[in-house]
Amino acid sequence: MQTNKIIVLDANILIRAVLGKKVRGIVEKYALTNQFVTPEICYHDARKYLPPLFEKRNLPVQNALDVLEGLNCLVEAIDANLYGLYEQKAKPNLVLIGHLSERDWKAVCACVKTALAELDN
Image (cartoon, rainbow, N blue to C red; front, side, top):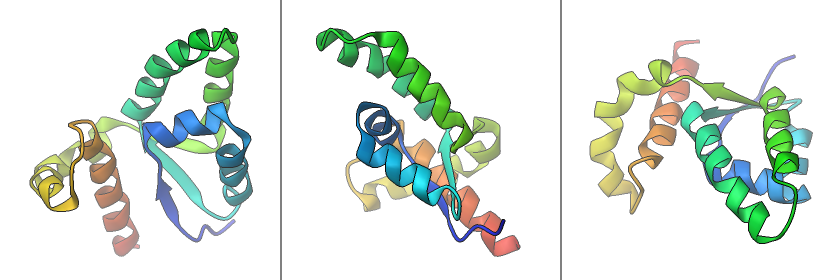
């Protein structure tokens, strides 16, 4: 199967894919023709922030974590070793992009890495 685009998701999108059907449905629909990736740290952050969200709503936390783990077959986690080389290139540009957290640079690095990989092909 040929993919059209590589799409990098951040932790907020992973969390939205767990909380609702719309984002998860979009990922499921377009995963057939596109490759979804995320820095591993985004899965880690989602695992960290989902339990309090579900506890606050008196919902079973394990259900949220199960849905998140189910996304692994649709959204590939990228190890920091693969995109870490791009930190020095991406971090100075965060100011130009706008207000981003320290963790957001990881998604930027993943974007740079995947864009460069596409250019090499």
